[in-house]
Image (cartoon, rainbow over the protein chains, first blue to last red):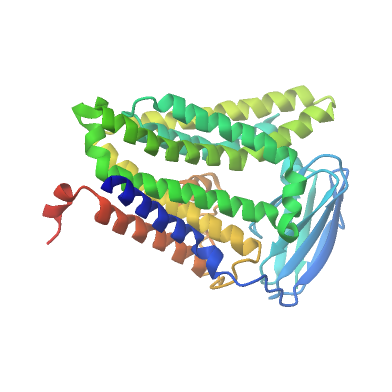
Length: 119
Length: 275
């Protein structure tokens, strides 16, 4: 039936389009990103303030030592990442201009706060 | 309690908007409640599974499992939405007409319903797993505030359902003929926005580094973390710092939807409009 052929053509095209970003990607290009270790325990970030140089990509290695899941979030850094209880998370942050960027645990926004200072 | 309400509401808000739109789109299609309900249920179940395996998922692909998972399911939703629009361009008038109960339309209609049920499932799954993790954390915590936080959480869920109903009843007030055009545009923008979000997730995973320069920063006019900003983020894919790649993907999806609708749409209807 021509109809189902038409439909399948449309689907194939749409799939191809949706996959474009995957095809276009190069392998992870880690051009000397700044790596920062951060841990989270009893609803507190340790250290509460982290530093990074301006205009370089940043990788935050977050270790959640609490038993519960947390969600690392920063509105200014455009980052949202769920980290399960007692496990690690990796957060890629694009190169930033100098400034102070606040982050927090979305599940405990009032108490669990920290900041990334880019210089 | 209020904090819990806000957290949960923020997560279910997006799903509420999408389910409302899908319900309005499928208003005249027979058996749509079963399909949409099925999508909703499947989404909730999948969200629980994802929540349970959140740690394992996250560790896949060098810690970028979550991002790639989000990009993948968003891409699935984009395909389904685009397909629906193309399908409707061909069969919309049959469904809207009085002969909508005709056997063929019902059979074909269920294909489109499956696509939209998947979209609903994906929308629920994406934000749902975070809600599950949050509520589970609260319920397992068993401190004094557990009951009130849980109450706030469920109130947030109820508010999300209210958003869904408001969207639905807002849309179905539009007359049938205009509703078709409106929902076509809404769904095309929704798909383009989701595709741009998928690109953003790939960028976060460092899988997509091509054209990742930020084109503009309109955060000073409308932040995408404000209430209106979030609504527009869901509906039309608004983001205050889009990269060149996100904009390209966004426009590409709109263009492709338009071209496919022209190519496969009902030829008799389209003819007079072209010069």
